[in-house]
View 1: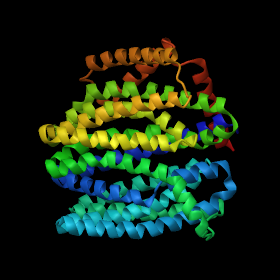
View 2: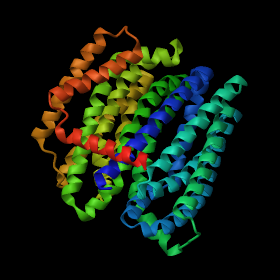
View 3: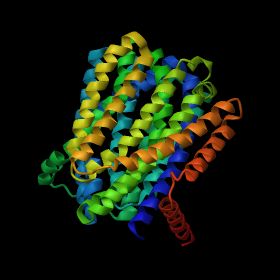
View 4: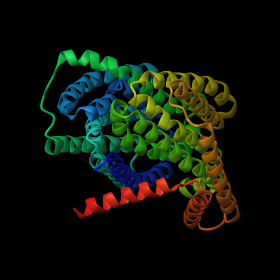
Amino acid sequence: MDTAKTVGKNTLVLFASQIVSMGLGFFYLIFSARYLGPELFGLLTFALAFTGIFGLLLDLGLNILTTREVARDNSRANKYLSNITFIKVFLAVITSGLIAVSVYGLGYSGETTAVIYLLTLSTIFTALTASFYAIFQSFERMEYQSFGAILSSVLLLTGAVFLITRSAGVVAFASIYLISNAIVLGYSFVICVRKFNLFKVEIDWNFWRPTIKEALPFGLSGVFVTIYFWIDSLMLSVIQGNQAVGWYNAAYRLVFSLLFIPTVFNTAVFPAMSRFYLSSQNSLQLMWKKYLRFMLILGIPIGVGTTLLARRIILLIFGEGYAPSVVVLQLLIWSMVFIFANAPFFRLFESTNKQIVVTKITGLMVIVNVAINLILIPKFSYVGASIATLITEFVVVTLAFVLAERNLYVVNKAELAGIMLRVVSASTIMGLFVAYFQASNLFLLVISAGLLYFGVLYIVKGIDKEDIMLVKSILSSNSSMRKK
């Protein structure tokens, strides 16, 4: 199977699993947010943010380095998996101690402390699972990671429904994360042993230091991105209280569930882009530019449609108690459009050994975001946090574009303007359709709007013959695989 078909197969597998996972996660979000209410839902999301930031110490960029290096040389898989797993165990001890000291020093209530400790263990299990996922990605066997994602979502939703029927509290909800992540870790371990014959204990102390050093730029990028994703919730909690956090995170989690789209593409193309960097610069250029084009085609109409339907979406999912989340959704969805656009640039830098560029961009991103949040949150609460996120993402995509050109990965300006004009035109027609039929059945309206958008895009030649041939090739290869 050639590279395009392999990437296509993995993209479809990951998309399918992410859609299933997102659907299950969607119901989990509805049930938990409605049942707990803005105050306790805000506490839970605050604890996720708190442990998520400390959990950065459990990776240090080791996962993405593993994927890149093992994709280039599969024979190194066991060496990376074994050593990096033991490195993470060592880091888990340090992280747990830091969290315990911080919780004690900040004087949180017993309920908040219990939630944080449960989520700390859950975060450790997730970090260990990520090592196995890095191996699946490097071998381009995304189906194993896909099943793990679905399994996690099934367990979370099942646990939530069970707890709601038992009138359980927020501490019990935190335990769902721990149990589900422990089970997924066990599954991932079994797959690596049985399908890849890996995880023979192979500790090489001389391997640790240079590996950690090389991974650190990836790790720092991860630190900056995670801080960026969670810092607004922490700042809102301190400045405005948990209710504001709940309103903000209702919309925030809806929007950032869409991250599965660039994440799927990232996971599918990264091994191939890493190989192309060594074997074919032309293929690398073609792949990342196609990736950028697809992100624009998908991101802009999502922004338009969500902006117009934000009120219906929020009230349908969360109820009147979350009405303040409407404006948050309308603002944050455009930050997601910018994230779609910058994802290909980040993967380009990382696959070409220029991960330090991503580190610098994400470091600046955190500084800009925190500064704007400090100005806007005291005055505008959750709306201010939303504006801060939007401004930050615009700065990031602009900077990524400029730095890509400096590193000789140039986007043809006329070509980019052409695709933008076609996408915006098709999105505008779709938006007018949505605005006119806004009172219609929401599900049918979304489906109809999507079909209209792609129909208009095809007419204005926003989708070309090469795109159609690629999709047909991918579908035919997956069809033949199923028959086998």
